[in-house]
Figure 1 (tube, rainbow, N blue to C red):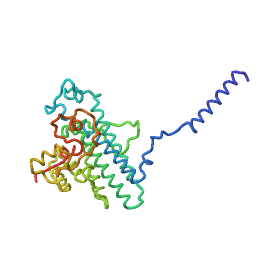
Figure 2 (figure 1 turned 90 degrees about the vertical axis):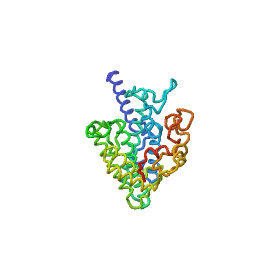
Figure 3 (figure 1 turned 90 degrees about the horizontal axis):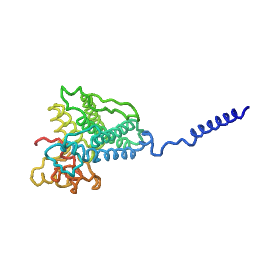
Length: 327
């Protein structure tokens, strides 16, 4: 055997050993990569996952500021100066598809939707240990369906045309019915299909809340009244006025609230952190959970001017999202 052939044989053997070693002890799963079916095992796992969804929902990049502020940014209720940077392109109607606010709203909305889809999928196959355990998981599923519908509703109205006979066949957003594997190719569907899935998710949220032993939750969560209020808003946008009135009345009844009747109470809705009798759903945020836009807390949270109507921290969405009828 020539020296050249010997060297080739040695090299081939070394490569084979190397590849075998890679398959054995050098190839490891990242410590932060945990399959959903292994991450959601106990009732506490589901509760932790749901807390993560609410954290994403309340981020300033989504419902904690940008989704609410972006509609006001280009209007005459806001003012900008030479020092302004936030929302300035939107204020000037110079909106590119690379706009960071638009990109982050899309990303955070879908992160919340994806996490809800994982809770729903794994919750459906949850192995019952005790009845108490099962009802806790079913309560998490109810909220997951409701949050998924809420996020889809906001995203559809931001990235699709308003619902109408003329617009309903135009492209809306990507419908998510189950967790989407990484690097999968997805496609947008019609606005009509988006609204159909939103209403379906609302129906499923109600069904899970109606299961035996599943308890309602507080106003800082997507409670039964909030689900009905969302249904009212969705049907209102669809011009299903009778359906909107029925759902709105259901929301009022379920919330057990009343319309504020005094000037002072109405003022407190916008200037204090107190939960009013009109609030149906709000997002609770820590004082340091904001992206600084100005010196006052109201400015920090909502992105509006100093006289903005949104109270800082808790209560941010209570009045904005609520569906009310004169009593």
